[in-house]
Amino acid sequence: MAPISSDPERTIAHRQKLEALGQLTGGIAHDFNNLLTGILGYASLLKTSLPEESEQFEAADYIERAAKRAAHLTRQLLAYSRKENASLLRPIDVHLTIGEAVEILSRAENKDIRILTRLGARRSVVNADPTGLIQLLINLGVNAGDAMPGDGLITIETANRETAAGDEIEGTRIPAGEWLSIRLTDTGTGIPPEIRPMIFEPFFTTKGEGKGTGLGLSTAYTCAKAHSGFIFLENGHEGGASFLVLLPLSGKDSSQADAPSPAAARSMPKGTGTILVIDDEEIPRRLACDMLRALGYQALNAPSGAVGIELLQDSPEKIDLVLLDKIMPGMDGTETRRRIREIDAALPVVLCSGYIDDVASNPGVLKQFDAFLPKPYKLEELARAIGGVLDMHGRTAPNGLD
Image (tube, rainbow, N blue to C red; front, side, top):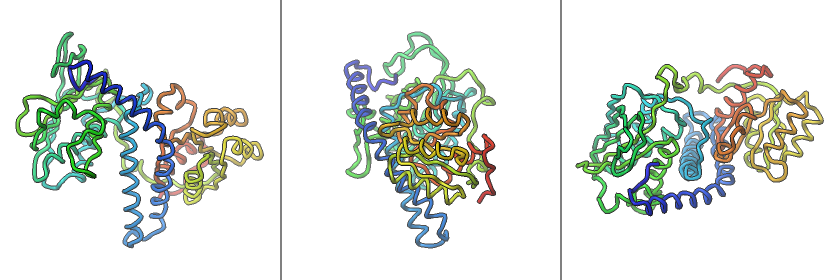
């Protein structure tokens, strides 16, 4: 799966590094995401009460943006421990995904760097996690931009490719099949031959202190692997660097692929009803209650699964939805949900967790809940998750949007 070298010992060592890093990051992800949930969430909540032209709004916006960057770094770390569940993958038109990535890169890159796309693939649908795929493209784009401190050109090309048994690319044997190839080329300084075997290793960077994490290309490698694909630094490319990504084609066409959500879906629904929030951590629990009240709901606060069950037993008819943390001491989210269903089998339950891998690696977990809300989240993300589930169950109709 996208080995960084044809040397088997180096490949095994690389995989062992990824496994060790996955264990380390998995252990801290839950607590770190709870802290980020508080920072990002309260910043987004604060912005709703401030005039957009005020200095206070600008300060809250800076806090929110900083928290987003921290969350982005956390997702990069968590990529090493990710075990993609087939239920998380769906048919995606990569040409649309490239368009989204280019839009993000255009805002992030030096304005003197141009981005050119040549989408030549006639078939461009793959089974993918859209967030992970965008992350792969952005990481390659940012890496290319960093190699061009002045002006330059990033070119993203697609094509279809068919391989036969025994075919090799850059010394790596590729299974027979039909593939979508994505080639990202830059006009930067290039990558010296002596460091090419190391560029996909975690934390390897040639940038100065504080200027790079060494996770960009390694995360791209991990994402390609998670999608049963390959990523290569192409040898023999002069005047810059060229990365080739191969992803197996889906059997579906573009009309059957999931499209990006329209702008209307990003609106913020408010509503009425009572939400029971069960979370053992004080910061995300209080944040969720404050956000829900700001959205027009009533919120009940439960610091454990046992307390939440007591509140539900006292007045089950008053509660319209439960927002439930996954990892809690004593009665965890899965057991709490089972007890909730014994009291009210039709009560909607939204799972909320800062460690998506814990959910993705357990088949069937997502199907037990009405929705999944990953931490950290912003006010509008909570609003859409809660409003959508309540509307679907007919518990309460969302009020007007603002």
